[in-house]
Image (cartoon, rainbow, N blue to C red):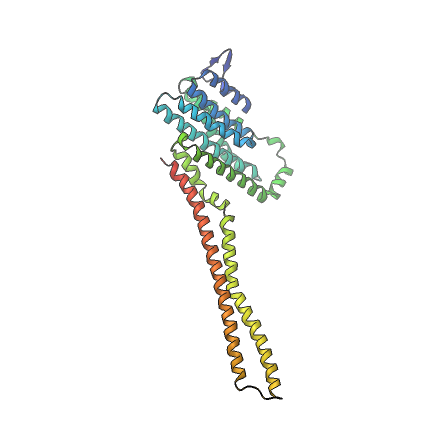
Length: 335
């Protein structure tokens, strides 16, 4: 298999690993024997493999990823080596995101055969990035046949479903809860992208411009914006509610007011049958009724229309801030 190089007394053959833990161990052994720059690049790759093994380690895993990438660049021999390391880092992150998305699609599928090809493709991409760094350690590019065999073997470690236990009962459970599980998994995935975005922006000086990273956020821009939509849809809903009140409440005031005024007019008219009343009292009453009710209705309508406009503008502003944030990330990393 791939260039059998010794580290102390231990032979390293990453293509023969039988678990993700062994992949991490092999990369660690390579790091001990590699130059300082490549050693830290290998350690950065370990963090990606570690995250896939235990996704709950997100925060510390990617802090270490960027820390090791920085050291790898600091120890790089020249600008060409720095460019190569940054390209490799972009591939690691791009394949990591593709892998996580494909894994979710596979996990929520009722018939997992439907999501298997995408998951396998993502596993191949992840395996290729591991093999690419390993090739740098071995000092060259492996022969095509070796590379195909090694990638195929490594990808089976990333994609290794327990098909025997995937019985009809579990399929029925996935069918029953598909919508809720899809929403939950999607929310977790988008949250991971958000947290990664924060780290990428903070560490921009380390990783630099990279079209692969920009591509990640181009692909998921709309989904990420939608994930934060409550921030402005709630304001737009409130604005719509105020618009309805701006005509609903005045109509209520006019209706109730007119009914009460009519009742007062009827009582006064009845009294006027038995006693002398002021000439023109009916016209005066209706004029004042119109002024009071109309004035109150206009004031209420203006107040609620103003509140509606304010909420609309707040919603628009929140949406634009969110859209500008992701567009800014895309522009920042575009080469």
